[in-house]
Length: 418
Image (cartoon, rainbow, N blue to C red; front, side):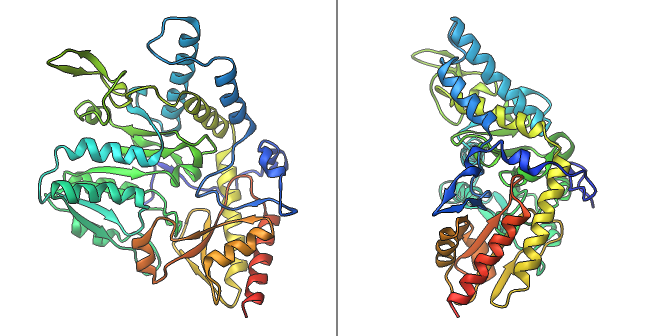
């Protein structure tokens, strides 16, 4: 069943001026080891456009003050920019209201917030369903509930063609299922999960759904209202924004009932010696001084993305993926992982005779940045029968010439390790 909540790449979308777009990212003009930088580590963290750098600098240099509680001009100005960024996040995922957007330090904290707050109601024997494709950020918080509350983790595997096993998932659902925590896009396989079907089946079983969108939201347009998910998680640094900032979307009726994650200033209404009452969402979950400049920078990143033709970008990224997959797939000694149709823009591979760390080091000498290791996905590595892989992940500013450089680099590695 097609997922109406996602805008898939339109292969007929108009081209955009990649050279002009690359000029928005100052770091791409750098040389590494005397070679032009080829940055293929975008799934770990993407580079920042000048608009984001300017927004963060201006936040510190011209408008900085603590937000919400001050009555002076700078505080009011900073608060307005901070809340404008919340509106940008609301618009980015099409949440119904800004009160459904909670700023966090990133995707990891957003997931931990849900685990902590919902975890208060978890009882021994309650079940949480996760997949073998999850990043550790969407595994470890649920293990906390297994260790501390007696929750039971149920695991959904992947099919032989690296797709989400929807049939097996449907069989796991039961009246004991309290939460389904699922990635939007695998950071190893690139698999896009069938969110509409997962959410429909989960809700029919009475379970809530948390979607880890840290990878998927970069490459797809997300509409949480159309999806109907209960929670959706984004992280700023993968969305061309600053580190130390992300956000959680949560349906307001859930947030209103959830207990606070942290205690302190801002998240309260009244504090006495004998009692405390909590603020309404989102401030209930934003104790203390927030990451102000980072939030403003995230808002700038989301506005930057919104100014681009995302259908054209998706088509461009798909073309890069097809190019890399075809060329690397021809190489004897290279094994590709991730065969799902309509996968996200990354290739993960192993190289015969060479450890991924050696591959990464040798590519780095050619100015090419890739990721090597288990990618914080050890259960999936076990499923694939490997301990580590090399990953090249693509962004809107990457080019086909850079793909050619990657292919030459991998060829040189193969020759060296013959």
